[in-house]
Amino acid sequence: MAVTVTFVGCGDAFGSGGRFNTCIMVDGADIRFTIDFGASSLVALNKLGISHNSIDAVLLTHMHGDHFGGLPFMLLDAMFGARRKRPLTIAGPKNLEAPVVG
Image (cartoon, rainbow, N blue to C red):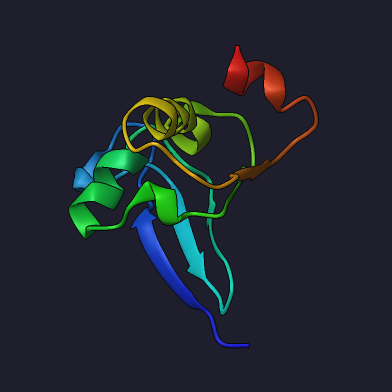
């Protein structure tokens, strides 16, 4: 199966060098997912012309803001702005729900 990998963001927590926080998008035949979704990921996706509603899943490597901080904003926009119509799978470390949902 062929996949396409897009580095939406690959910077550190401080945006050094003008790079966005970590967000690596993988497109497969029947799925689009990201590995991490840092605080600046929505801005980075918008800059690339990619709708966050086209993402099927977010896989989080660990719970630092530059790796998951954009997820609450993605969820808020999906509910109230972009009106997401399909499920979004979120997977990550043990006890994931507490830092993401609050």
